[in-house]
Image (cartoon, rainbow, N blue to C red; front, side, top):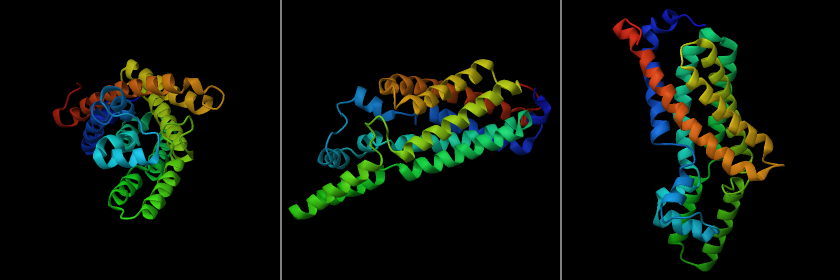
Length: 251
């Protein structure tokens, strides 16, 4: 079990703990994963089925369009990356090698997700399509749109190699950090187990989507809900851990 004073007594990490806590709360409340599914469920917008429909949606409602294309998932991952950095600092005494592996997985996963996302290329193409002056130019842009969507088919069971790797690596990072949270004693066991279950849902999907595609929706939906709860619980705890350095007492 990690010594409390070894964590809370180091005022040099206070800013990182606070940044990680705020990032986790923002990820849990605002930039939740799978916002595109919420937009589809609670608004009049629905997932386009053709490239021309994508271009029309991105032109008329860019926020809904980029939400469907997973842009806000990338924002979520960037915020989670800040949370991972804070967790790495807090949990280092509980398992330095685990922190290194988890941080590496998280960094590569987040970088991969950014490179694999097609929201901005599709948004640019939609603007060019709206301004196109000839049928030939529009046809060429539609072909370009199909090629871009093929890199990350957001409605398919397999959403492309980049999206798959980012989900796998970030889930693995979350699992390792959650196990270290459980070992350290600095976090509530419920928070640690929520992170373990959330990561397990994503990892099971990564393994099962080939032979059990019907599990995609329940696994990703359950994982997304559990991740939201984990981010909130973890963010709140990180903010608590930031206070003793300035206040001198355990919260």
